[in-house]
Image 1 (cartoon, helix red, strand yellow):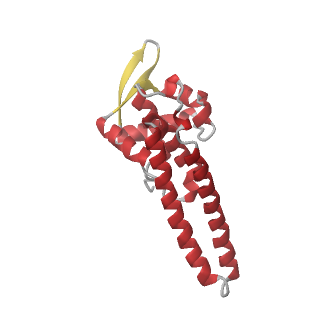
Image 2 (cartoon, rainbow, N blue to C red; image 1 turned 180 degrees about the horizontal axis):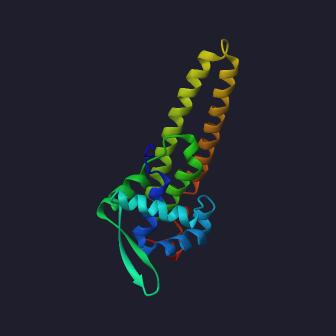
Image 3 (cartoon, rainbow, N blue to C red; image 1 turned 180 degrees about the vertical axis):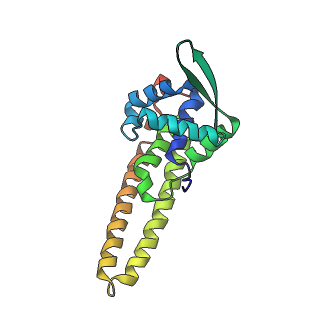
Length: 189
């Protein structure tokens, strides 16, 4: 089995950065989050699997607390390595246009807790990545237009998707300062 790198799952570290909590608490917070809930939905079983993966990577540590006759529950907290990995994750743009819909939006959600400069920098960095991808696709398309029209059409479609992302990033940049109007539950401790 191929071990896939962690991506959007690192967003869970953002919640635990605010305060340590139980897995069930974290699931409730994700379920009730109107903002992030619009982007990312996790079943409780998926959440526990991701928490176990994050713990195995050394980003979280847990303590098991007995509950009498009920199953014991785990209390998760961020490790120093988890804090470092979270900060690297939240500040870096996503590598592919297809990752904007979930991973970039999750990063944007958490970047708001770091202030307007962090939001603006993330948007700027993401824009640079998308612009480079678009330029590469356009160069490839220019070579293919006459000889391989189907391939040219595919590249035009992908280029159009990147154009849409760039327009959306411009919209984000225009309201970056407004995005940091956090609710009390979203503010870092």
